[in-house]
Length: 285
Image 1 (cartoon, rainbow, N blue to C red):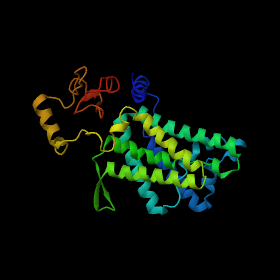
Image 2 (cartoon, rainbow, N blue to C red):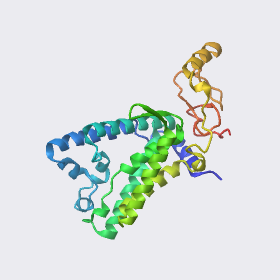
Image 3 (cartoon, rainbow, N blue to C red):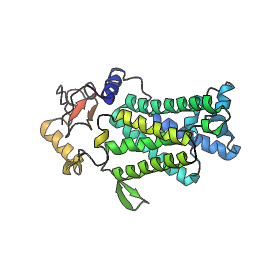
Image 4 (tube, helix red, strand yellow):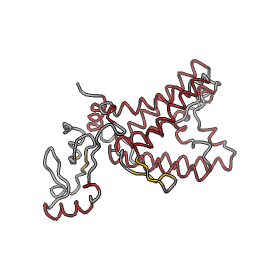
């Protein structure tokens, strides 16, 4: 029986044009523009774009989408710049790894889930209750979980000095999720419980076949070859006449210079696939 994420891969393969290229770039630019406008309007711009059920029921339906452009609060200018830059980088890397359609689907399902949560809470508490106001803070945090699942051994410089692997930062991210859920439970703040859980479920939806092996519990494809990848690539192209070769059909970048190739993160080893087979092959374990 195929896992859910396998079905998602096949769906993305069959619908390659459903994605929005550079989606995270537009989200980040929108956050920056709204932040700058807030500085001159006393946060009136964020108030006009946020997910506020009372406004939606009055016909302000743009709030169902525009709330993704409302920047998080409490960071300051420098903190917000670092926050947005990090998620811009993570979003781009996920899009390169997954492809445009799958990344768009991940983000789109997360946004849609937040909308559903907000509307359900509106029915329960009423349109003017603060419990019905949602944002995408936890959806953005779940992007880092997806990134760490794909690149667990990638190192970040914590405080620009201390090298820390992505998988250990992911555990901190998960601890923040757990702490937020627990504190919200103690205060009976249900939106603070449901929204983080929904973000985690969205993450698990896309990693259903490997959920038990992520964050250090599985041997990620990492070896000494990754250290000298550029050198190895030059030597391979010089010796064999090509750099990439599909493990399924055998097409190379020399046969078709316009063909895109990707390495599968679920296969145990360095297996390259063309765009026709990246989402339509049996994972090698």
